Image (cartoon, rainbow, N blue to C red; front, side, top):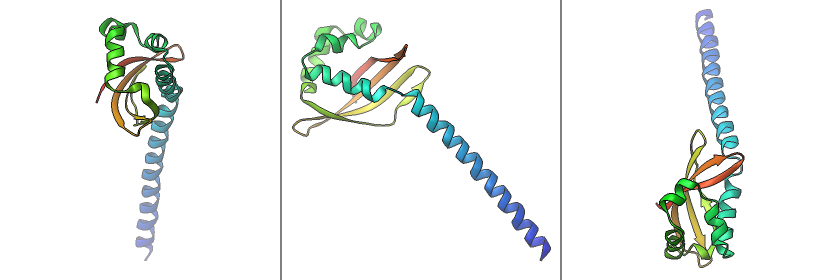
Length: 138
């Protein structure tokens, strides 16, 4: 009887230790994701709101120099028109993938008429602001 009680005791301690380690790992990942993407949802909403308001130049300026060197403003406007981004109502975001100061996220742009447009967006954090570095259909 004493042997089975001590086995159960150590088994309980082992199980508690494993659960504690898993909880700590989950908590670290959650905190990293939460603080690593601070301000990202607002940046995404601001970007699309500028487009809807006709502030294409300002939205284009929220992109990185690398993005602008690869995508002219004419190409940017064509992407907006082709994907009906000017009809943006809201977005649904997936869990972002973070690598250092780079972040990639799948976004579904939902238009005023209810059409859902899947878009892959990449961001780079400069200072405390997020700049669009990738914008393509997913």
